[in-house]
Length: 92
Image 1 (tube, one colour):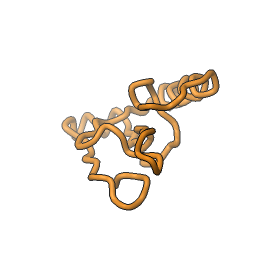
Image 2: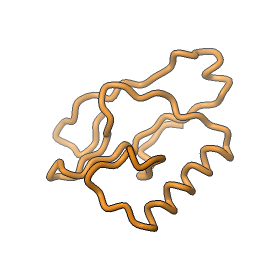
Image 3: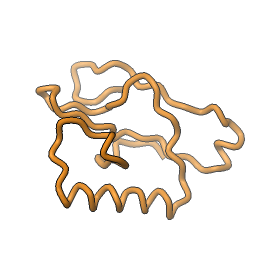
């Protein structure tokens, strides 16, 4: 499952953003979803954040690739590389 989930898993995936009760609840629910579906978040390399507010002060790591344990058993070194930010607010 690949996507821009507009959610984050830990406080370290956000920078310079106000983290309120709703954000913490959303973070908990997103982690519960991943745990309940038994998916794993594969390693992201290249950049820590994948979304930037237009002023580049607020950043988040909201793009994820979630895979099954079986896939990681077949390809244990799987990871995805995040490219530099372009004109858009997301990194490819």
